Length: 459
Image 1 (cartoon, rainbow, N blue to C red):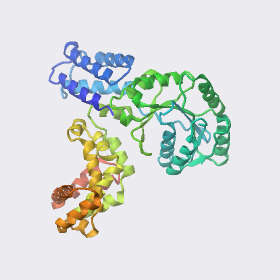
Image 2: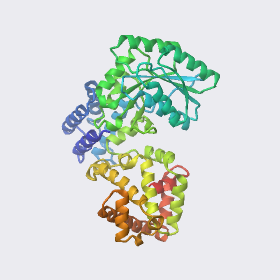
Image 3: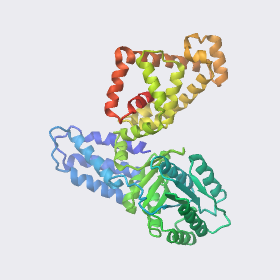
Image 4: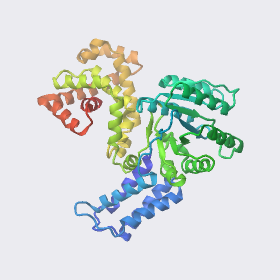
């Protein structure tokens, strides 16, 4: 997400570096470039105008602090204005209601509403420790109810059965009663996808809303529709009292116009953003973190939080202890590190959150590297336990067998063994003379308690 905008902005903002003072003249060209970059990113024109005016008003004539270069001041202003148009701070769900707190999900057909219901239920169950019930009132789309039932089982939350023979209003009323009787904390209601112009369907969801009086009414919208996403959300907001927006499919939106337009046009906060198809790829929306990523500054906080949740800490600590004792780095260890990285969303997801890595990602052709990592795991799995623990015994005939077993070529196996050897040398250097322990202690100083081992295990 934001690859194009990030590249344009980071390049453009370098133009003001070296100026003694930020004046209207020396930032005029930069602001023009920023404006073009935002329009190309499909950001709505009113949002672009407000953003440019905000930056210009703050930047022109501002003296540069003695400890900072003008470019840094300008980037700081751009960063703060990006945060402002996206909503200042994370707006969490308001679940302060007599249980069950009801959350109604609305949106267009194909926006990913049903999947978002499952993803959100997973977050509420695992991070908020809530007892969650989900129900589908979508009686129009074939297999919609079955889809939610399957996803609910996958994430381990309760599903309230319904049928396409029932009226949506009867389904939700029954679900509310059941949730009260069984003491559920939260009830998530999935509704039928509808078009803003479909007056009959809009009347139905309005009646549905009035019947259950939800504490949250979230509009689920596909980020890839650009500024149309913001306009559609506004149209829905005129019919329903929306409390927030969930942006889906943001991983496929290289431009980012929706994220930068929705808050400004609708006046409603983006509460969650979907960054992939996997069931755990829905995250709370933090405007400050996203602004930082757009400007190539990374998002280390999200990376650390992700590591805290997804890394197998026992494995990571075991690996760290092994390295501090100077033990051999085997192909099994190599496979574990690749799999830990995969748990974190893969190399692209991690690099996207690291400062200054945006352009390096393109140069390194990260997507291709990602695919190559999966191939490495397949080759390692084709080896015997003895080969994984002692790669030196892998002779020509063994390489041939491994290549055949993994559907690869002998040169792929050679490349794997070379990569492993290089990694083993690096690990040996780091662990020599307490290097690993020093590195771990240094990392622990920057990370939450218990994260030192986990984070090093990810490296």
